[in-house]
Amino acid sequence: MEPSLMSRHVPRPHPAPPGNPPGLLASVADLAEMRAAIVGGADIVDLKQPAFGALGAWSSEALDAAVMLWNACGEGRPALSATAGDQPMVPAILASACARVAATGVPIVKAGLFASPHAAACIAALSPLAAKTRLVGVLFADQDPDFSLIASAGTAGFYGIMLDTADKKAGSLTTHLDPLTLGQFVEEARRNGLVTGLAGSLALDDIPVLGGIGADYLGFRGALCADGRTGRFDPVRLAQARALVHALG
Image 1 (spheres, rainbow, N blue to C red):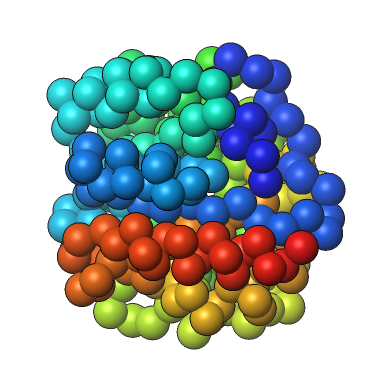
Image 2 (cartoon, one colour):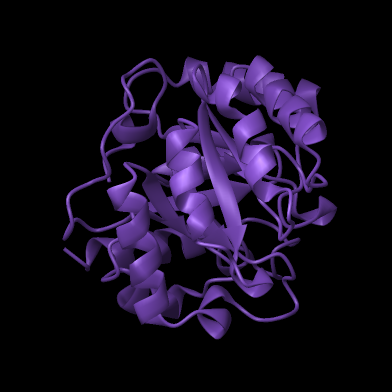
C-alpha cells in the first residue's frame, strides 16, 4: 500500500484493490523507535505505548513531538497513526480521548471498540470527529467481535476498521479467527468503504498466510521487538517483515 493512501490532507480513499500486497504498520513506543521505523521503511508508523494496554496511548506532549518529527520528514514519509488508549465504552469518554489525540495533529486516530452493548453508541458519538479526522475503529478478535459494527462505522464516516487482540497473553489473531472469517471481515469492510487492517500478536510467519486475505495493512509490535511487545524495537526484524511483505507481490 502506498503511504499516500493514509497521509493527511487528501480525500478519504477507497480501499486498495484486491490483490495488492498489504502495507506494513509498525507500532512504536517512543521517538527513537519512531525514527527507526521511518528509516526502516514502515508504511504506517503507529504511536502506541504497549506498557499501558492493548491500545496504550502516548501523552499529548509526546504526540506533539511525534507530529513535529513526522512533519519534518516531508514528502515520502510514512503515514502516521496513534491510539486513543484502552478507554471504557462510554460514548463521551471515548469521544474525548479520540479528540485529544486528534488535537495534536496526528492524522489517523485509532479508537478501541471493546466488547460492550454500548459500542454502537460509541461509534455514533465519534461521527462528528470522523467528519474532520481519519478514525479507525478497532475490534478485538478475542472478544467475539460484532461484525455488524463495521456497517455502523461506515455510516458514521470512519476511515477504517481493523482487528486486533485485547489480551496479549491469550493468543494471536489467528488463534481466535480463521482465514475464512478474516476474509469475511475484509469483504464487509470493503462493502462499507473502509480501509482494513489485521493485527494482534502477529508473527512474521503469519505474513504469507494473511497477505492473501486482502487487508490493506498488517500491524506488528511484538514481532518487531527483541524481547516481546514491551521490548526494544529491532530494525533488523522490520527489514525481515518488509522483505516478506514485498515477496507477496
